[in-house]
Length: 183
Image 1 (cartoon, rainbow, N blue to C red):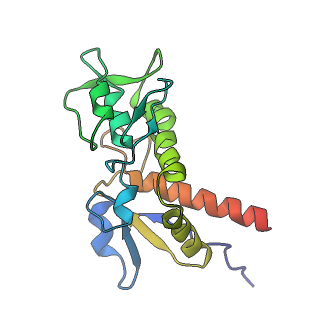
Image 2 (tube, one colour):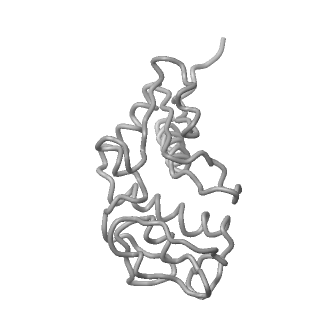
C-alpha cells in the first residue's frame, strides 16, 4: 500500500512546453504579462523598498532592478536601474557586484537573485497569493508554473534563469516545512 505524498509538488514548466500539458492541468503564468494577482510575482513588478545585497541602506523598486543594477558592464554597475519598472541592461557583463566582490553568474544567481526574489515573496507579495499557492499544493493540486523563459536550471548560463523555477522551489520548500511542522 503506497502512502499519498504529503503535498503535490509545484512544477516548473518552460514557456514553450505549456501547450503540451494535459487538458485540465492547473497552469499559472507568473510573468509580467500574467493576470492579477500573479503578475506581482514577476521580478519586473514594482514593489519598492527591495534591499540591494552588498549595499547597506540601498533599495530597489524591483528584483530585476537589483539584478541589472549590480551587473558589471565595462567595469561599472548601474544603480539607476534600482528605480522604476524592471528593465533589461544591454552589454556583455563581466559579473555581478556583491559588495567588493565580483561574482560569476551562477554564484550571483545564488547569492543575489534568489535571495532577493525570495525576500520579495516574503515581504512584498500579498500573503494570500503565496499562501494560496502553498494551500493548493497541500490540498493535492499539481500547479504547473511558468513565465516567459525556458531555463529552470540555475547552473545553465546559456540563457536567463526563469524566476518561475525559483518560485517553484520556494513553494515546494515551504510546503515541506509545513508538513514537517505538522508531522
